[in-house]
Amino acid sequence: MSEHQVPDPQSYRAIRAVYTPTTITVYQAYSSEIANPALEAQKFRPPFTRTRMTWIKPSFLWMAYRSGWATKKRQERVLAIEITREGFEWALKNSCLSHWGASGHDSTLTKEPWQKQLHASPVRIQWDPERNFEFRPLDYRSIQIGLGPEAVERYVDEWIVSIVDVTDLMHEIRDHVEMGSLEAARKLLPDEQVYPLSDELREKLHASG
Image: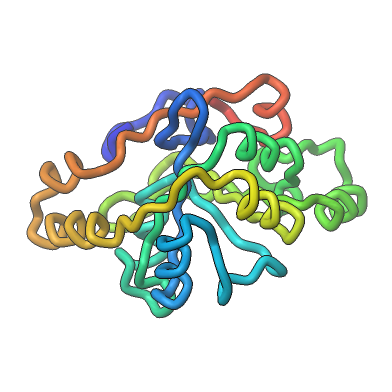
């Protein structure tokens, strides 16, 4: 879906990503200190740490917004990480929404049980407004997936298929945007489509598409 298109109401809170029958691409931004060993090994190595939460993002433009087109400190390198759909869906199945009462959270779940569920879950989910080329919030949401230590171990050791540096692409799109060439910028965007979810996952994530 192009960034300027208004999504179908069913896609208001949907996962939009580049995916194949067996993999899905997510994005992360790091310093060169972490990016270079990861690219060489095709796996995250120290100084990457497995002991704290790491956030993966299927939306290229949300990653652009978060990293300031790969210019923010310690986010100067943007990596496209292709992971297995099996691993990705394990993360979704073992997740909890990070804010009680947010994103259509089940009103029957009171705050205390939600807090217990949140602390026990290895994965956290946030639905944040998608962004356009000027980083203004759009009228639909993109998913952010926070992997806790248990999930990070699986991510690093089992799920990763490939790691590609897309920093130059980030900068090329930014340059077109700054020149006002939005159509040229749009043509360079990864072709993200709505990711198919089972009824079980759609209900768990409070997704609309």
